[in-house]
Image (cartoon, rainbow, N blue to C red):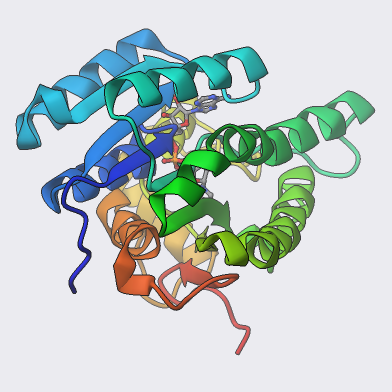
Length: 271
Ligand code: NDP
């Protein structure tokens, strides 16, 4: 696959861990420069050190930024202008799921989840759209979830907002096509990342079911894949998600916009 990423600049929100970090590494390996952001300075420092090992620290910009903070996103954009002078692809990846059922989701939870799932897209897109247009071949990629199409009752607010994101991405793909900015989504099923490690450490899955005492993380992942009926019988790796994000961020997908691609090990049953 010819991704033609040499000297392209890719901004990845939530690039300090899991899928975002693997996507930054994939872009760097193909010759791009990357910008990553996250809230935790410690996680960012460790990610930046790892990424610098791929093609040098000059190709990596790592900044703290909460994507829900409009001023912080504007500062991130200004830093990208100052450091690299361009942005060719924006990967809106920052976030996590909220475990709750209809009964346990408060009005404030609904508002918070809407804020996270929509404004984590809207603010970075608003900040970077002019640079993406100036690129001449811009790309926006949203890391979303298979929940958008196959909701789980124990992730009710996340699933509903993920479905809304797909609708929004479709509208953006049409509005931005004349600017030659492509807009696509990656629907993740179960990918071994920071959020799954945190759940394992907390001893409880997103469905509220306790992880049996003494069970290893590997065995729990096997059980998870079984319980969610994943035909490939395992969780995906961040690299497997990153390959698809790189595809959508690059010219390898130059005639694709308004699309979604599932990275679920075959979990989804829709045709
Ligand atoms: P990780 O927890 O490993 O990574 C999440 C990243 O997002 C971190 O870098 C985190 O850094 C950052 N982040 C979270 N909130 C914010 C914020 N408000 N502003 C800036 N950065 C933020 O999880 P994943 O790699 O799994 O998650 C990547 C995306 O994929 C998420 O949107 C997630 O919901 C989605 N997804 C993942 C699935 C999976 O199975 N892994 C399934 C479906 C969807 P920090 O905390 O320091 O801010």
